[in-house]
Image 1 (tube, one colour):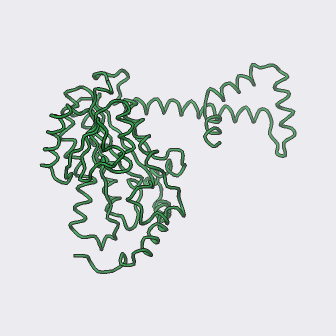
Image 2 (cartoon, rainbow, N blue to C red; image 1 turned 180 degrees about the vertical axis):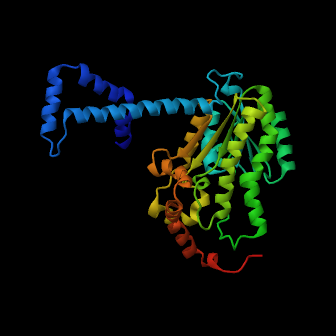
Image 3 (cartoon, rainbow, N blue to C red; image 1 turned 30 degrees about the vertical axis):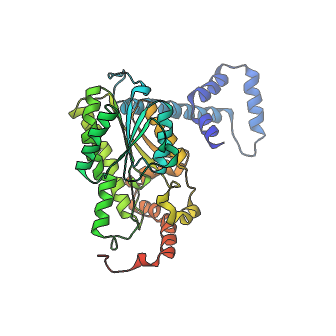
Length: 361
């Protein structure tokens, strides 16, 4: 209902048609509208209603223009595509962390199009994709540059040059800043962030040579907000957003390869194994989204052949506002961050050791 109302109010085709009816329609129509307005409990004239629709029409046009400029920017300012044509049944995709819930849903959609998928992960494939002929598993420690290089060589030999890279791998330790050990902190940063340098170094040159490519960075809504108890995750996801922005600039200007597209996705709380310990706290303030929903959004971004910057779910007004928090006064940002406290309290109740005040060796 909300989506229908938003479409009606901000769609210039709709508001423009209403205005045309006011100005050029039969006089009896305007008379009927005026008569109906006179029965309302609040005073509203026909002239006022027209001005309201004129304002909505102007906003709708501005929204459409902005959307077109967005589309153009996601195409690296290419009005006409300059790369090689896409043929899904001839493409190769690399998905890191491909044994996870979100990646599994994405892979299902990729192979449905005939795309060959190379999964780089330390965990074996789940049953849903284990026996798929188009899916090939490469056990790879993403924290090791040498291991990623070795896996990349094997992928290119077995499947061909990848034109799609989905940097999806991500973990969270879930410990206060004073509690997380050096080893675990190093692991989170390497898996969530530094591994993206490794994979892009291996696969971007092939995309440039092939004159087509798409690199998807799976970040998080945590890119925009801090959550106590998962500082490791938040910091790396903020870094993933910065990585995506820098990568886009380098592809556009340094490599002069506008036909290679980039997408950054920011899912909200998703029902995966990562949030098991704080699921009850999340449900008190927000609804969990499904891996299927996230996988579908990622697939649509890839199949669009354009870049994108997506917050997931985009139907939730909170998701649209979250990226603005950084530019608002600090007290608003602080209140926004504090809305996550129930998640942390739930985790602490389940594991009181989280609030120990000594450092973990």
